[in-house]
Image 1: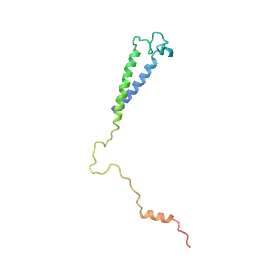
Image 2 (image 1 turned 180 degrees about the vertical axis):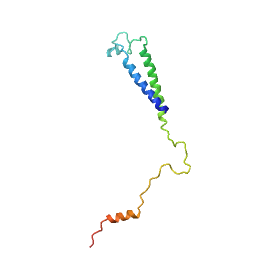
Image 3 (image 1 turned 180 degrees about the horizontal axis):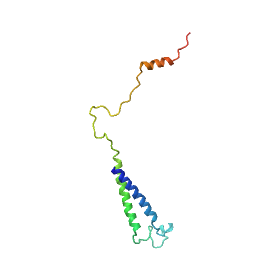
Image 4 (image 1 turned 45 degrees about the vertical axis):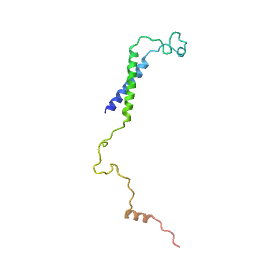
Amino acid sequence: MFYYALLASYVFVCFFLLLVVLLQQGKGGDIASAFGGGGSQTAFGARGSATVLTKATTVLGTLFIVGALILAIIGQQGPGSLLSGFDDPQGVPLLPAATTAVETPADLEAVEETSVDPPQR
């Protein structure tokens, strides 16, 4: 139950991170500014005041990474079983063994009726 609640919250964090990143305004740089054509700006743009969207991106990005690590750790443990902590009191395996077909007299009669007699000389 905890895993599914964590997974649902992780999906919401991913959705809001996507939304916040798409709502941010561009820094005004094109591909030329990344290679020194932008004057005094660095490759990542000029450092301005942090807006609400920038702070939200930082928080949601941190939650994204931490949530991914937690879900990966929980996912490696594998699903639990209802019978995982109990021993079988009779020592009999929990799953039935593969059975072989046993021929009964009724089966043999059915085979004899359908068989073809060889031609006589």
